[in-house]
Length: 180
Image 1 (cartoon, rainbow, N blue to C red):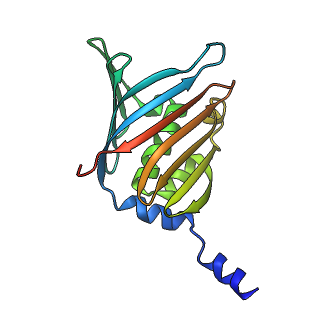
Image 2: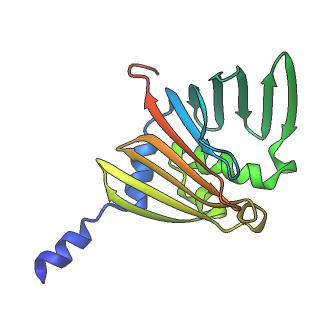
């Protein structure tokens, strides 16, 4: 009985994960993503690079199948593809803001911000963890069923999103070592 209570007292928890994540102020990574779209045979594949700069700048550069860039800087989202650029505020699309905050809050180690949009369940150990997020915002919940982020220590190594209607996305993230 004593061993059981001692092990639960030392359980890996959300504050500990957030502390590990908050240590990384910026980073770069490569990604591969497979999107499984209902009605299509086989996944849609994409690959490219990701970068993060605390507290609120995310850049996703898709290189394949066609070049496009999505930049989130504060409340501004900029999409660029084929020489065309579109800019909008995240406030104008609450469901997109929630998905951005899932990544941004996790990368920042900001549990308070994460709790505004999601119920979270952490499982695993510091060496192999999974953070399951369930939307609590009605507009986001109408689009996204769940998000699961997994990683090791202060690094996010994968993101899986399940959308209402059955579509899902699986992203594998490979940090670029030595990036600052």
